Length: 211
Image 1 (cartoon, rainbow, N blue to C red):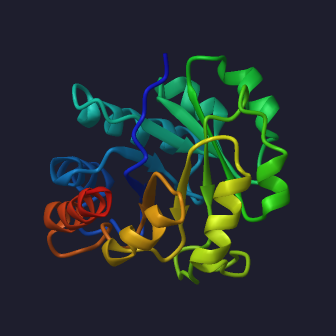
Image 2: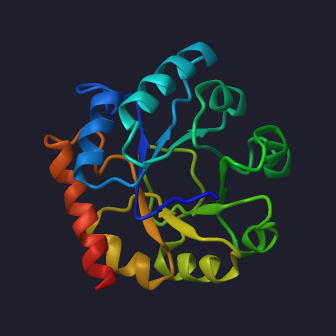
């Protein structure tokens, strides 16, 4: 059975993580409370993705935190990752599911209620909904939806959702109030002076939002 916790979802960015590196950033972030990690590197080739992914998987071993690979099914399989995340312009979700089998986690990005309603919960395990705010880490993103838009899309989705796009620790309360199970962050952890403390701030904010 697939078990995963979307509470504190770290999306790794190789540029923002350059100082400490993605592996060390991940190690510290998990110590701080990160519950799921996504490897996203749009500039790496397959061999580099696999090399980085295997290093990340090694550092995550025994933590219970799954590694999700963004938009590269072949690399995810080669790594033995916990799952794959695809966007609307990437591989079709049903095709990705066919390739990875039933045991791996499959996440899908959605930006509208219509896309959320089309999701087949036997194919997709969770959705990333956003962007909640404008964000420099993904300059080609769609128009920000805000927390009202997040709530509408969460309500339309038949699977758990994580909020993404410019969200930080202080947004935990409105994100969870909108129905999200957690928040996905990039710059709120990657490149911060104290990675562990940054992750802990978000983890604590999520706990308080649930209290």
